[in-house]
Length: 141
Length: 195
Image (cartoon, rainbow over all chains, first blue to last red; front, side):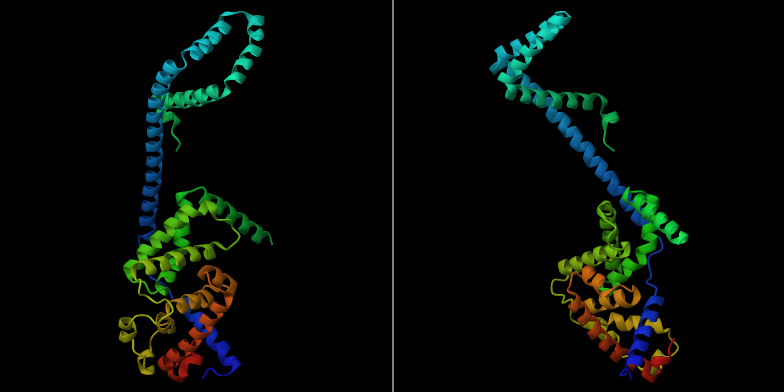
């Protein structure tokens, strides 16, 4: 029945036409239900982010306290020198302050690993503190 | 020409909205493609409940994957490949023994004996053809739907089904032979003149 070329083509045409006419039933409220699921998924994502930020803030606060104790116990001299130089810098006037910059750079070069770690811990601690105080305004949405 | 440009711009801005996670645009996306996704799942032989589950997972996957959609493939081809993957994963997970290239299960095939020509009379051609397609092995059925209904190229079908082009051609060839056999029994000698 479908042996010849034209019959083959007719069969293909008939198949295509019949399949294009076929409509697959879809539940009426499917789109609405899908949107609700998507909204829920979005909310879950935002919630997961907030929880992560809360945990980071908590960890940051703990680290800040622990770091302060460790530094005070193990590096009292460095801390005294570091804060002394800052206080000194602020109390001295104009040119004297600029004159201390090379000294500060030299001091940083000598113990840059320490200052880098301290900087990171301090930055994280500041972020944690801000997150605790102004959390809602800092949230990533 | 101007219409084409306008249409392209409209499509681009809709895509941008979709990628940005706009829910209104995604609702339009679901409305536009839900039948296609249901059809893919149905072609894979899933039951009514399973179809809805897999279709939902498909749209969720599409929602989270839209930001990565490059636009190189047609949106429908991209969605088909997600739906197909979700359907196949579902079948592999829930019906380990299922053979995708084998005939559909005995229960379905048994309940739809070869349709006598008299019974086919008075029924819509598309229903009879669709039932014949449902009796094909799942991968053949998907290839037939993609080729004849969605008018996808062999290369696109191969991409969607993650198969070689020759494999797709084989599916289509075998499916046609099987469909001729089933439909000839259903329509008798009347098949050529049916519109």
